[in-house]
Image (cartoon, rainbow, N blue to C red; front, side, top):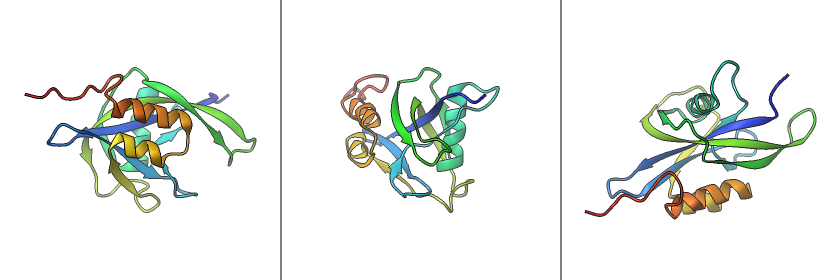
Amino acid sequence: MSKKYQVAAIPYRRTPSGAVEVLLVTSRRTRRWVVPKGWPWRKTGDHDAAAGEAWEEAGIKGRVRKKSIGSFEYPKLDARKPALLEVKTFLLEVAEEATKWPEAKERRRKWFRPRRAALLVAEPGLKKLLRDLSRGVGPIRAKPKT
């Protein structure tokens, strides 16, 4: 029996000035901006599955945090039975961006400041997670000025 939730990564990086950017990808069907997400993987921790989804959908690798930063809900409309799914979300600090990856021909990816990303995604809970990142709330703190 499959689990009734999904896992997602919020890929992020710091610019040379210390600002945080997050990576969004387009969904395959509707082409709207989303974060890499998918079903949990058997015999794999949820954080590692989220990192695996980030590789498949966005061609990125890095260090994923083991603890979820929160969750959001979204309607899974293309399933056999439409359902409202919870998505456990993990931060992934991007170390590598590939030029070729499994879904490269099916998706676009683009870096945004968290506040801008929050305006582009549809899910209210994901908007909140991204806005919190833009304010330095939670696990990514603003880089101290020296």
